[in-house]
Image 1: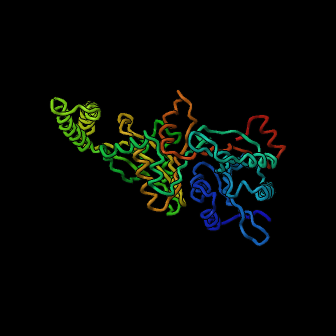
Image 2: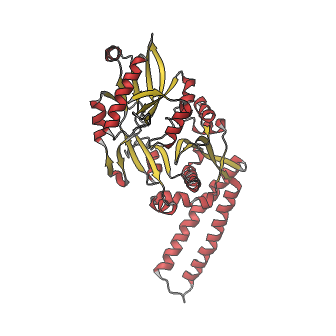
Image 3: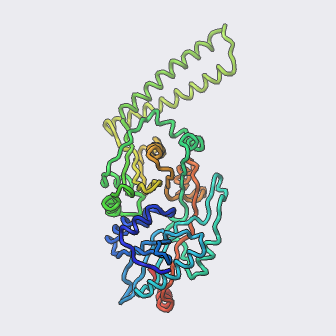
Length: 403
């Protein structure tokens, strides 16, 4: 066994079919990162028959003098649960990088340490992987971002079963689209997109421009979607519902006043429900009228940037019109995109970062919006350094010079 340098074509062919493929372990991501000062290498572990049995992108930067450090985004394309493969890949990778004057490489492996189902019940746990990595000299560094520890991933085998698994609040939000009738459309307009995500994004606008420029292969593609509200149609819909409900309510009122009609519990309950609907849509008509006046016909209410790769859709960034948050536009947009891409053959939907359900947390709203889709929650193991040159790494650590 030994490590070889793969061509872009060799690496692309290997990574495209690997079970651990992800959009960061791609030629596209490596090329994009040249804009941030990284050189790229595509490395493969080959067996005695010259078959590639493991591979990785290594992003390289100069540390000082002739010495370098590297980053393997989302870890290696290997089965981390295969202890023998992990040991061999680590051994030969260290030998190869030592010849190139690497001090260390950092990686954030894309394997789940724990997988949670509903009510945060642990479904699977892989503690042996972490033990194996640490025994091979990987140094655990924790997380360099709170947005990396947990991801919400929705696996769709049947679209109706998936919808039925959603919680009641999420279903209610999605059903409201009958009223909002949002128009979902694709438009790779970075400026418009960024204006809706700028308050929460940790990236600058050039990062998304680079993603659009580099992730343009049919197998790994960056796209932006918007949800638009037709304000006049929304106002008409609310008015029609209010007028129809008033007619229904009037019939209930006549029945209640009619001394020949028995006043059943159901009749009284139906009248009370109708009263509530009328009060609700009186407020909605006022709200819709104000929206129609302010936004003059139509307004984009939500946006999502995503990457399609293999059978997975990654929701990279999202945002919504803050003044119209009651429209639940993000939930509606996500569901419409899930249905659209499921028809095209995509079955995994990475909804992105999800915090723990900690009450009073400023991220609790994110948790509630994503957990309503009943995804699996993947807990990742964190960041690691693989030390190539122990002496220099120790000195750099002492003086806090590790990148």
